[in-house]
Image (cartoon, rainbow, N blue to C red; front, side, top):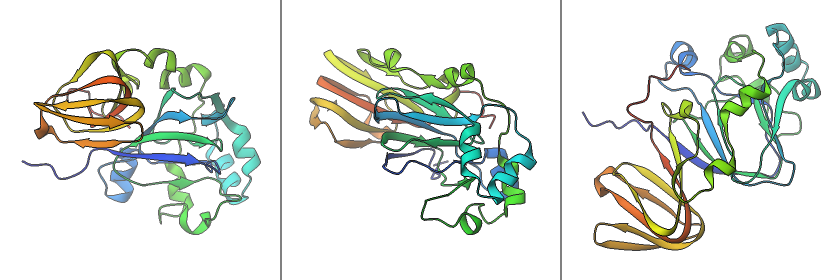
Amino acid sequence: MFRTEPRLRIGADFLGQGLPVHLHPTREFSRTHLGLAHGKTEAWYVLDAPEGARVGVGFAEQMSADHIRSWVMDRDSEALLAALRTREVRPGDAMLVPAGLPHTVQAGVFVLELQEPTDLSILLEWEGFAVDGFKDGHLDLGFDMALQAVDASAVSDSDLDRLVVAREDIEREGLITALPAEADPYFRLHRIAAGRTQTAVAAGFAIVLVTEGRGVLSLGDHGQQIARGDALLLPFAAGPWSISGDVVAMVCRPPDPSAPEATR
């Protein structure tokens, strides 16, 4: 059977204003309450960020449903932001953001974002943003229901360590996995730094974003010149391909078919 449902979405976000604290539902919540097969686990690859830029992912301590609801209803942005576990991010770092975890990103961070094929967001705060959270922040479920999607568990520094792949582990020559294995049921991301060799990639759907330099993408007997800023879509039918030259590219791919079923 030919599958027409998309398995991957990507985008590039320049967060000139930062993000309000929000979260995305899990697959289980989406199936139960929205009749959808996918939630919205996502991942960020940081293309650029000011020095010392931070993201907030999850609560630093276990939170009660009453606390969270009161912060939302009272529009207490200060309390919500103070409750998050934060981490510094640098250009070249990558981070998986599981569905359910509240998160925010500091202004000025530019990311390549991979996500499940939905656009489902639940707002916990929206102070200073051009959105009416009371009207549009709860997926038309009402906040009493929508806030059941929040993962209110405590997130430690070591928990965030497991979600992050540091640039020192990514910025190497060849085809390098840029996300933790937990991402595989949702999507995959690889970095190619061709360097002095030709780097080969097996056949499979991919979206390629060239982030540095110039080089050649080869498909069979055909060679395509590529340069920083180019984006290419490669269908499975194109077969295996390779990149050569002084070039760096990010390769966004659908889930690993051999990965265990997603648990969120």
